[in-house]
Length: 360
Ligand SMILES: Nc1nc2c(c(=O)[nH]1)N[C@H]1C(S)=C(S)[C@@H](COP(=O)(O)O)O[C@H]1N2
Ligand SMILES: [Mo]
Image (cartoon, rainbow, N blue to C red):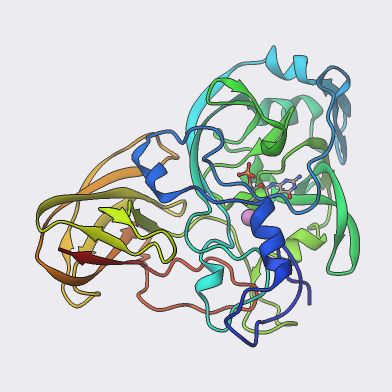
């Protein structure tokens, strides 16, 4: 069965392969000190591209709406820009975030916990465009096709993902053409991409070329690849919205190679961000003893309805070795686990972050 975001298989050793390094050198995470910003600076936001970044000429770029619609049409990027404008901060996370911490490790893009970012996206709501196209009564889903093309799981394909009509019609679903006040850079989907707040990133199709209404659920490769399965060949469950996660800015300063933290004894403020696409974050807890005892962090209001919250925690650091742990819970009833929830593709691993610190 196809793996998501890369080669197929489960690692038999802890050593990262050259193919995984090749993916990790193209796709990058957000350095965790980037958690200090409400809006992630462009270039610090994580990046995940399955195939190649396609060449794109904005002036001639055309997006089509067709399939099971009564009035198919095409539009340009200028047409998108001339429509009602929405700008909002949105926290996006790759569904593979946490994959490399699973044992055994599913071989693919080897994320630790940094496949995250919050950008201020500008675009136009999708729904009015769908209304203008007038969906046929038998339409059940919309398929979004990107301009990038490649082979994955032995299947040659354009990158494409679908959404149900109610999910695609939500107010916050945008066709986005700017990020942090600038045109999209090539790697984030220039000149126009889909943006589906609350969902894991795979649904926000970059380099959008086609929107196709279909009368049967779409079963393309990238739909099959994002299912929670215990084994290859299981039916599995489709992955949709982001589970809760909290991350901390690693305190103090790092040792270069192991990146273990060093800090001085005394009162210090731990801080980070927490988010959930499944509900609202209700609680962030911190442990300074590896998860034995916990105390509540102070949770600030979110940066926006679809964006993360800042949290802070006052800690009196005492000399010695410490393991800091942070976990979030949301009102959908999810709490980050302390142990892995293993699955075959290494998806949605929101196991709590642990940071080793030496206090001197
Ligand atoms: N066309 C296209 N869209 C895509 C992808 C892709 O490879 N091609 N990757 C998806 C995945 S898996 C993620 S996590 C997000 C990443 O968005 P970003 O690179 O802008 O952070 O884009 C999604 N949209
Ligand atoms: Mo992803």
